[in-house]
Length: 204
Image (cartoon, rainbow, N blue to C red):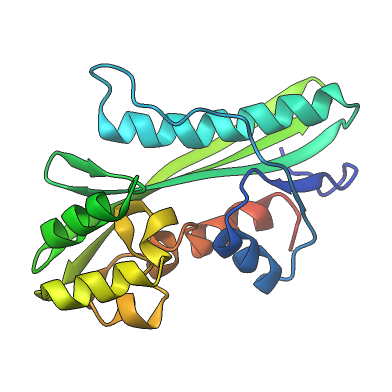
């Protein structure tokens, strides 16, 4: 069911990520930011893709429930989660410089996969609908020297990024030789798909 004939829902980004906020602003959207209180911890035996999708879904659900309890009846909540994986190894945000070094050394000269789960949770009174999908993008790094890795860590940028790098940064973008898939998804939101979802809901 489209919202073309319903009251315009309040669009909410369930994330404090500056990159995701920038994307929505550049799309010309009016939105609010609500930080979800969700722990991002894998469950024992949980598959990586199940984990990233659960994170995105729980963020959107937490914010939708919070806002609905505050009396907001028409909501469109975007939740997302991005992780980096190489083989069976999950690379999230590094806890310290040593872990950032370990991640970047591990990624050096290899192709890894960035998985971004995105959820759009629509609340219309007591009626709830959800769109959810995982987007995989392959990213190849050239071989990195220890000096390059240490210099990049010294900028502080790796510390709040999954996989210890931000592809949009000048220094880290020079690590990348190839991207196969959605570039914006690596940065946190698959914009083409998000546009189609929001267009179907009457936002464009």
